Image 1 (cartoon, rainbow, N blue to C red):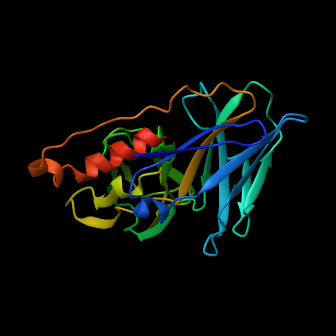
Image 2 (cartoon, helix red, strand yellow; image 1 turned 180 degrees about the horizontal axis):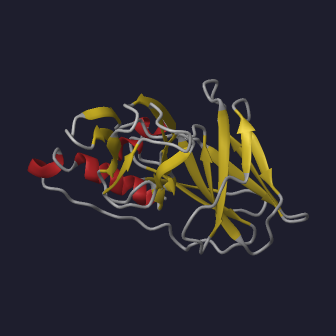
Length: 251
């Protein structure tokens, strides 16, 4: 893992990128920050991406354990943003996402049929809230049939397709991915026969970047390092777990 420390007017910033991170840069928002003390302000800039359609910016305190909704939504041509809701002596973690990771599918179903919706996460941590504010929702016939996000490895809901105005014949499956879309899959099956009516995933991960910044906030003496030794015969089988560990260590 390669760690890069930056400094600005009065800046405490630590950003780490896995070594040989060509694959990471394909989805990363490469963001940096400088700060001003009077008045307190943190200015962020990032490398422009002509393919981006929007940027969603999230913020949480150094001691917070979960993200809330975005503090700003910018157009795809944006390459900077300033946060004036800061104070001297405080630091925050910021997440910049240039794709929402929103999946939306419409599924035709037989009116009055019993169906089973199941969503799965191969890592076992759902899609909320450790690595993003993901959620899923299955709706139709003016009714929300299933909704959630924090479910561990899998969650399923069984229901009969019917609505206030009588039977109807379509459902909408909407999923907002967390940072690891490749772990998410789902299917909608007939409740009687078990036949799969529709399915989705795994998905490409959303494009994002994280940064920790503050004004006169104490920096760590050393960023630290981890040495992981893996027996050569096991390296290929553990490649995905090692990749996930690298990303988790960067957060």
